[in-house]
Length: 120
Image (tube, rainbow, N blue to C red; front, side, top):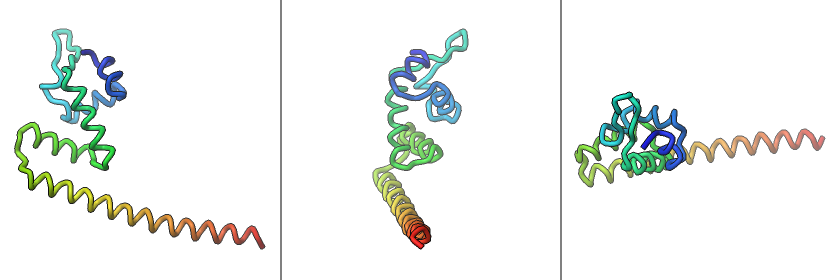
């Protein structure tokens, strides 16, 4: 399928798909080049791009996703490694959550202070 079709089926912009390909997130099993140098995407590219989007939604960076997908493609990760990765991502998100909560406390204090100035 052509990139426009893939774009419509995944709700991704064509430049995003090209970028993912350039970064190695879509390999030769997902995209081939025709004689005229046009890209031809396989049906598996749809699932791959949807998986990338899911990883992004839960906080993985493209670098992390590339590493995970490479390990999956090569079948080089055992279950314990996968469990450890997920546990580490949970810890990262929990730490970010605490940082955001601290920022909210500070912003609310600033807002309360500014609102009190209007009352005077």
